[in-house]
Length: 194
Ligand SMILES: Cc1cc2nc3c(=O)[nH]c(=O)nc-3n(C[C@H](O)[C@H](O)[C@H](O)COP(=O)(O)O)c2cc1C
Image 1 (spheres, rainbow, N blue to C red):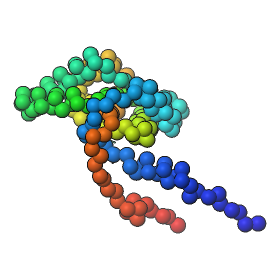
Image 2 (image 1 turned 90 degrees about the horizontal axis):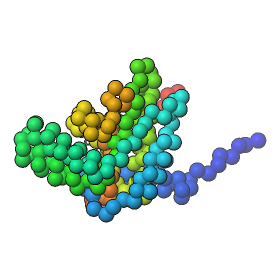
Image 3 (image 1 turned 60 degrees about the vertical axis):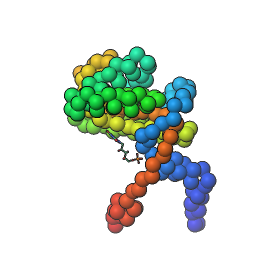
Image 4 (image 1 turned 45 degrees about the vertical axis):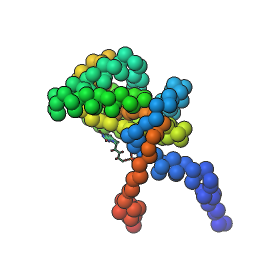
């Protein structure tokens, strides 16, 4: 008997693909506040990422006003040390326009394989977080810039660097501008083996 394949060409699937394709890294945000509840939901959704041994190696740190002020001062310091005071001030100003700040961390592991798998899971969780927000009209940017790798940043967040490392600092907010992007075609990235 001939087996029939269930139809997959649904509106829901097309819309889902549109979320995956349409999400862009956002640089410029409106100052419209993003509801805390939405961010909490996005974090909860993020934790459903695939995760070998279900170690749940992630933590999501939401920066409040006090912490943010310290992070911005550190940002100015880091940039000023590299490029001078004026550049530091300029950067602090531009970063203070990022409406929401979440830092995603991953627990350290001495086991090399587990460490890779945990990091992979944290990356998947970060993408879940960003996609959930995107579907709600909220853009984001994942950064691993200097500040994310600076021990002083961990101190500000109260993170023990022996136990966790930063996977990404994610800024989020309603997009002011959504850039375009392109990707290689399927034939360049897919290999069909016999
Ligand atoms: C692990 C990771 C680290 C990133 N770090 C930075 C960064 O430090 N600075 C930056 O401008 N973009 C950073 N990005 C964002 C990428 O530049 C961006 O995803 C890429 O340009 C493709 O754009 P799209 O996200 O709109 O598809 C990072 C992305 C990932 C996944």
